[in-house]
Length: 150
Ligand SMILES: Nc1ncnc2c1ncn2[C@@H]1O[C@H](COP(=O)(O)OP(=O)(O)OP(=O)(O)O)[C@@H](O)[C@H]1O
Ligand SMILES: [Mg+2]
Image (cartoon, rainbow, N blue to C red; front, side, top):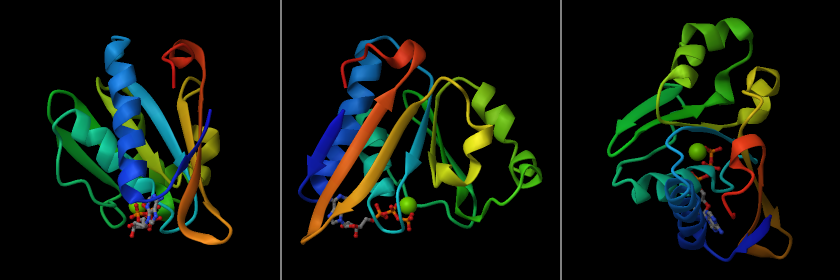
C-alpha cells in the first residue's frame, strides 16, 4: 500500500498505525525492513511504531548498530548503515535478535537484503519532488502479515 505523508508527525502516525494493526491482529513479533535514503524519515516511522507500545527515546542507532527497547513488547531497532558483511551481522548477534520475541526494525535494510527473514514487512520511504516535507511510503507485507490491513 502506498501512503503519502506531509510532515514528520504524519510519518510517525503511520508507524504507530502499523503497530496498532499488528497488535489488533494478535501479532507480537515481526521483522520490519526499512529502506530509504539518509534523512528521509525512517527513524520518525520507528519512533511512531514504538510510541504505540509506550516505548520512548527512539533515535538512530548508527554507532551502536542496535538499540534494544523494552515496553509492553521488546523492540530491537537496527541501523545497518555501517554493516558491510555477514561477519558484521554475526558480530552484533543479528540472528539471535531475530529469533527473540518482539519486533525487529532495521533501518538501511537494503544493505543486508540477502540476510533478511523471508516473512517480513517492508517499509520504503522516498522523497517527493517539489515538496521538502512530503514523503511516499510504500508498505508491503508477506506471509502471516498479509492480512493485517495496512
Ligand atoms: N514527511 C516526513 N516524514 C518524516 N520526516 C520528515 C518529513 N518531512 C520532513 N521530515 C524531516 O526529515 C527528517 C527525518 O529524519 P529521520 O532521522 O527520521 O531520518 P532517517 O531516514 O532515519 O535518517 P538516517 O538515514 O540518517 O537514519 C527529520 O528532520 C524530519 O523532521
Ligand atoms: Mg535513522
